[in-house]
Image (cartoon, rainbow, N blue to C red; front, side):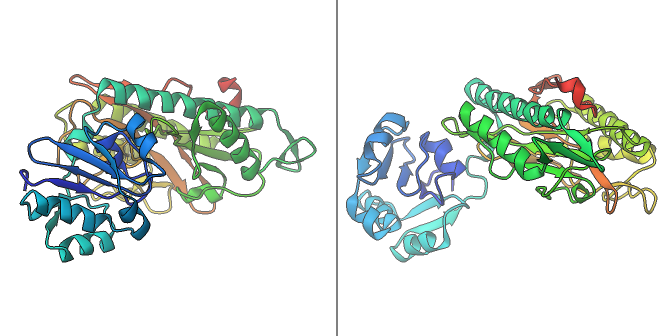
Length: 375
């Protein structure tokens, strides 16, 4: 399979494999890399000049007919056949209709599930710098959200600002505005108050309550770099209940244990198990086999982390089933959390790079529960 040419047709303008191969984000087009290293990018008349400026491809061409008729797969087949080639590798991201068209045009196209996988895991210095820039944007957005929370008044247990309740939606808008001014975006960020944040991926809605955790999970992508950051903090405005202090302290201890375990060559599952061990030892529970803990206590019901890059979630996965080792250059999140329905949740997340001897943490801001510590 490795000697076969690569054919990429983007599934969207955020197709990470296409961007990785070409340096160019576009909604529609065609990229072919031949086994001798020769490559070409073909796009529409609309995008041709931008492609010539931004793309790394050695040849940049336009094809109006393929654009108008969405016939990129048939164009790819014609180009391959002209070179006497009747087989190719394609990305798992390719839309089924394009794959069907490629095969119907006489090309034995095989989906390569490991396409660019190893290469994308080992981040280059330029990629690491882009991720760090996104992480700095995430930090700025989190601090802005916390600043809004810290400046709010409390009225009947609800936070108020500028004469009305302070809601997840208002905080989302402030964070998105700041990110936009910095050249980033994060349309699916999480700013969720308790008890709804016991659902880890609940985005948040409605008024924020005092004396209860607010989970702020922001994972911006650079509008020009296309690389992500990922950062989560949990804060409480007003008096912090002791139960949440204990949950947060256990989460921080688990985070530190995970980071301490990270280095190149360590099986990814070991990082997750280090987190589970701390949480169970502190009297909590997880959904991982052997670390179920007691019934009815706050629980961690997700993996410890994941790779970050052109996708906000990519390889490696820090979970109990990942036997493969971490490699130098992996950029991963470490994000333990504890949740209980009806009560709420806490989660803390840092992002950094795996090195030969440890973990280079890209995250610099405090992990405190107290909003005042961020200001």
